[in-house]
Image (cartoon, rainbow, N blue to C red):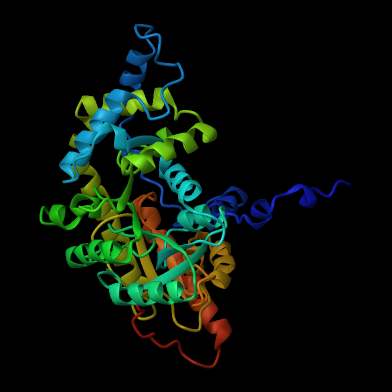
Length: 428
């Protein structure tokens, strides 16, 4: 039998499976399971009739290039629309700064390959998005986590971690942030901290990678439009590389996202993309362009905000009813996720097996923590619950199943003692 391990590169041996995809494998093995694991958009929100009409018009044969290879940068009319979106977000740009990517995950991968050498340090929120952890580790970066407060990353702690790394002779490449309704915590970075981070990046000569997939999905009224202003909008020093996507507002199956970066970096990112896929799907890009051109995208946003706000409320109410005396959580003002603290004695990763037996699954909190930053792993008693995909009745049923599993776990761990309400969690 051939030992293929010997053929793997060091990076290939070190690659780790996505914990969210691992949860997806459980779904295929057990019928009827309710999943709060992946942050999928709700299928009932997809504009299927509009998409069918657009697809038929595109493949009518009137344009022979619809199904042809396209430019690496992307379909120019779509790039022009993206430039308009950036302008609406307060961040005017130019086409030579923009690059269409196959989902934001490819954007993370391209930035990692262009900016990181093995052993370089990427600073991340603690906790942070698992896809970013994978992308950075796959190029053999070290991750340095920085604690968050209720309004996002702690800027004083960020500077202290940075100075320690520099004193140790480490090279810090950039700070990775999800400022709007962060995955996994749902936190919204305050405007004050956004300004402070830009000043810090300039003072310490560090780039910021701003990942902004949830920006349009705010729930609490028009005032929030100002609160989700990208860091990129106020970047006067060319410090911010900006990622965003159509996956959460249109349909993730199209895998259409974009990078906005200073021209010297966008040129290098384009070259890196040529070695990855040459060009993202041309048909997908034309579909998204036509959706935007017809105004379908902008008309959908109020509906999406109401839809996901209602699901957030259903999950939060169900948690209060079933687990209000045991668990704590903050109610997010947008996005797809609730970040829930279990009683201290409960290990969320170990609890998954029991939860699956009861027909519900989630992602344990430790998947979102970098454990190579000198701080150590975290999130042992935390879990991320996605409220975005499941219908309301399934959300209520899933929370009820989860409550049974949690109470069984507590009883198994301390059969003689009643479960005590834990202290409120730190906004990790």
